[in-house]
Image (cartoon, rainbow, N blue to C red):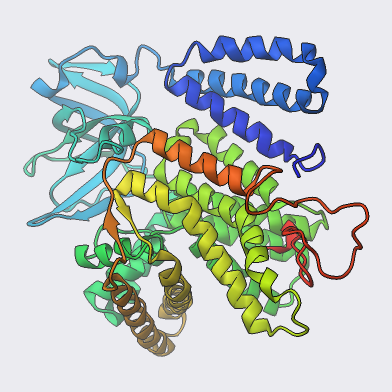
Length: 541
């Protein structure tokens, strides 16, 4: 049962902060006064003493989130968004600094090179104007521009076009949430002058190292294999063949092709294992693993899902180092709060939403589902570890499917009933691909002969992974397209999930508190304390 002791206060603060961001983003100004009025009325709620602090903290952080969102969206008069000019009708000259790595996209007859540019000056009608803000620059020829270069070029400035027929996704809104309001299209014959080369910063050197990694492993793999390894380990998804992407979408395993918490967890485990073998002190292991993980996060593009996993890993590892007990729901809440403070628009990022919803489902729902699955076996005198592990894996897959499938259907208009079974087989193969691919990248620099052996294992594991996903995609009823899902449908669905699993009178798990007369040992009837298994959140790593 949800009691005062079971509240995650950090989760409550983060939820209130996120609610305030939503109110501020959609300019729900009537919500702001309602929050402030609610905050003033909290002391008068004498009949609700048990939840009075809960309401007060939620409303307080809601107001803070709304104000923070408003301050983040406020742009000064020099911002490019405030320039009241018809940019699309003429060419403009721009000067600025490259603010991202160069992304290469394979198009039907050419390659497109795009990068984000932090504007310093905008030239129009022969005059330079001090301008700030960020735009997306698109070139259709190869370029040697690097992250951090100060450049000058000419192109047509226009508002992003809408190509998607899905009403629940807008490319224009996607860019605006990254503070990008315009696209600069540069012609093939237009020069791009480098005014000042990039300084040798840490981030620029990591991007250079990323290109060297791709160059080193290129001779060992075919083009399609190299494209998949780049996507799975380095976050470069532009070159994944369309038919392979469709296979993984139709089986609900497309998350394997994008860097996510799963990949960060595997890389973190690999780093921790190697450092532990070296028999280093615990503090040295913590510092080195944090540095290496930070490098990998930047190397893979630092998407919200990757940063979330990195923050959680560092917190959990630090808690073990300093022998402090933490709950996973608190760790997840802290990671969300950090990302929202860095950029409140992360809340509307699809990757952010799916990442946090998945982990929340694993942390909150999977123990209850596992309890349900183990209940028929509770009277068995013996139970093999294989059966227990299989039940736990199945419970995690079901929990993830329950919380993520409707969100996928909302954004991508496809529903995949086969996802639970497919993930049980495809995810272990993906783990093999990650470990073999990491070995290939390391030994391609250290010992090339051994890199050939790892390359052979990468080929085998990749073919097994893609082949398994393909077989699942061919099953009858493996997927079907679901169009017309609205936000209200999504809200009602998650409300039902909460009513079933999380409230004290939950339909599936009605008994969430140990009764006073129940013994501490023996068969437990509570999903939070199954027999013979510790469900303390700090141990579910």
